[in-house]
Amino acid sequence: MINNTTRQGFLFIISSSSGTGKTTLARKLLASEQEASSDKKSSLRMSVSCTTRPQLAGEVDGEDYHFIDKKTFRERRQRGEFLEWAEVFDNFYATPHAPVRAALAGGSDVLFDVDWQGAEQIHKQMEPELVVRVFLLPPSRAELERRLVARRRDDKSELDLRLARAAEEIKRCKEYDYIVINDDLELAFTSLRSILQAERCKRERRNGLEEFVSSFTLTTSDESLLKL
Image 1 (cartoon, one colour):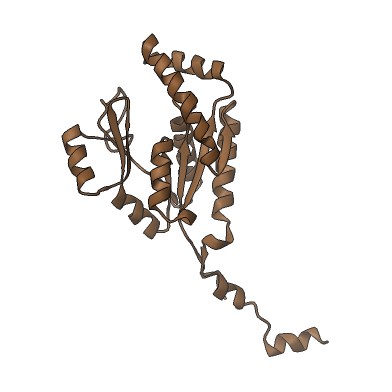
Image 2: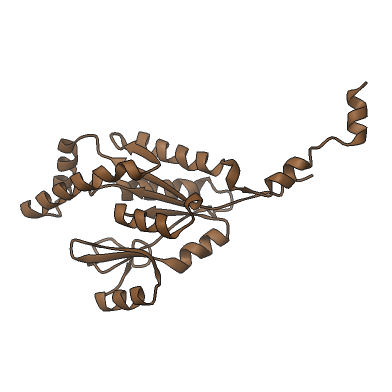
């Protein structure tokens, strides 16, 4: 009998405080999956969020985010189009519901780069067995501050606000399934990829497994051979 089992897709959520590297690692993980796919159709898809924040230099609408205004955001939220949403630094972020369900129905895993608020909402709205949560931690407060300063995006007051918020966000790591400390980018990436592969191998994610296993049941002729 040919192995005709299929695998149940799941949501792979990566969260962290600002400056910990979740976006960099999420993109690296997605790229590695695409490179490893023989037909160039990766079974891992990136969930693209909607946001009302300004588009930064180098960002591509529809790839990095769907950039929309606050009026449109509120209208879509009112219609129940979002799986989760959050307000961060006076801007809104949200995950469109329909593309996620469509990806899962097609057997793909969906990668999320969201904060703890988004992860919490997704976990509440989706079936628990379909959600895997990973929290990235910085190696130290000093290193986190160094990384935020190096980005040169914030003034002193904004930097202090991000550090204070980071301290509160980091406390949420205990709600996650896995913890990865991003001290070294390559090691953190290896850990994330290992978690992804291990979750894909879970017995409960394999559809049709019972029928496949039953195909190995000994026939009468098989039992006779064992007696020889």
